Structure formats: C-alpha cells, structure tokens
Length: 320
Image (cartoon, rainbow, N blue to C red):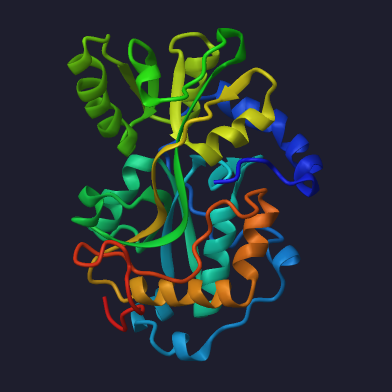
C-alpha cells in the first residue's frame, strides 16, 4: 500500500495527467459499453522482458481455451490497476494479465467493462477471467474463486480546500461519501454509519453511489460530496494527477485485490501457478515498480482463494 509514485514514473505520469483529467470530466460516458481489445497491452514486454511459456502449465490448459482463447473482463475505470488511457486499456493489472497469458501460452482477449458487470459475467460464463481488483470478501467467495494480486485498503479523498482528513473512521460521521456502485465499501460504511455513528449519538454517514469511479471522483471535485472512498492506490494515483486533492492518512478494511474466476474453472489454479512463476522470476515486481506501486503490499506467492480456503493456505491445488 505504499502510495508514493516512483520518480522513474514522474514524466510518464505527467503525460497521463491531462488525459486522466479528461476521463474524470467525461464521467457521464457509458463506460459499461464493452469494446474487445484482442491484443495485449502495447509495448508491455518492452519493460519487463521476454516471458516464456511454461510447458508444464500449458499442457494443463483445457482444450476449449487453447482453441478459442480466454475472454478476460477488465474493469475500465480503476487506475493504476485497470483503466482506459488515450483509447487504450492500460494498468499494472492489465500488464500482469498479459504476462499470465504468456506463461500459459494462451491468447487473452480483453473486454473493458464496468465493475458491476464483471462478477455476473464470470458466473454466467460470458467471461473466463476477471481483472477488476476484486476485494476478497466472504460474500464474493460464495460466488467465485479468487487469485490475489496484492493487498490494499480503503482510503478517503477530499478537496484540499475543504481542509478535511480522516484519521479515525468516526471522522466520517456526519460527512457525505461517494462510492462506486458494487464496491464493498458501501456495505462496510453502511455498517460503520450505524455502529460507530448512530449508536453513539452521532450523525450518520451520507452515502451516494455512482456508476463509475470517475463519476464518484467528479462528485468530490464539483462539491456534491465531501469524500470519495476507494482503494488507497487508486486515490493516491488520482491525487498525483492534480494538486487539488488530498488523501486520508487512515487506510481501513485491507483485503486482497484479486483476479476473479468461476468456481469450477481450471483457470483458477493455472492462473495462480502462472502468477507464482512471475513472482519467482521477478516479472511481477517489475510490473509493480513500473506502475509506481513499488512494494505496495505485494503477494509473495500464488494463491487460490475459495469459500473453503479463504486465506489460500497451503499449496495451490491441482484442480479447482
């Protein structure tokens, strides 16, 4: 969860800032529209090296994926993990997806879409993998299996001119908070509002949900709400693009950020094992560093989280 961006990324981030601002202004766009991006991220291999197919994993890939490829749903509005920049799908998680596909020797077809479309799309078979920085909550584990990419917690961003900071969760009592529709933070803060605020005779938290992360952030910059809640890496990335936003010192409710997969899919253990390969050969850390995440609570091994094994304890299973 280190939020400071590496100096080696400063120039690149500067070039992104104008486009990122435009994305925020364009929050009303229909980001849920899916656009298939058949190829991997442009130039991805240029910085993390040549990732090779691991024959022992490739041989275990089900025939349907060898023939037709893997359809990967990608949340399109969550920088620096997954987002659209200058018409291209980019992000640290996107580059990781590309590397995983290389290890498995399988073509990944990327479908940028809204966050709330990914989980049901995995369940009904529309998508085979979901790169959407899913928090590994109990509710989600009842529906899907997950492969952790790293850990992150919730932070709170506001306009600097409002001179607000969240040092403890009770500081949100009586405040208005924007949330992405479908994010676990809405459930979490609904509970906090009752147990921490109302139960102690404090004013409840006013929660507002928005269909995109850009729209939630726009609600803050336009003065409609006081805070936006999101992953600390996402909010600190946003704050780096503008001089008007401050991010809370409090980081709460830390969970794994994960890749989603259908419960009975062989892609679950294979993706976890491919991630282990990338961790072991240093590619994983190169991708993290490239996107300014440095040592932002990385995972140290591949894991498959299930309802029966929510912590991913023990070796990666050979079957889902």
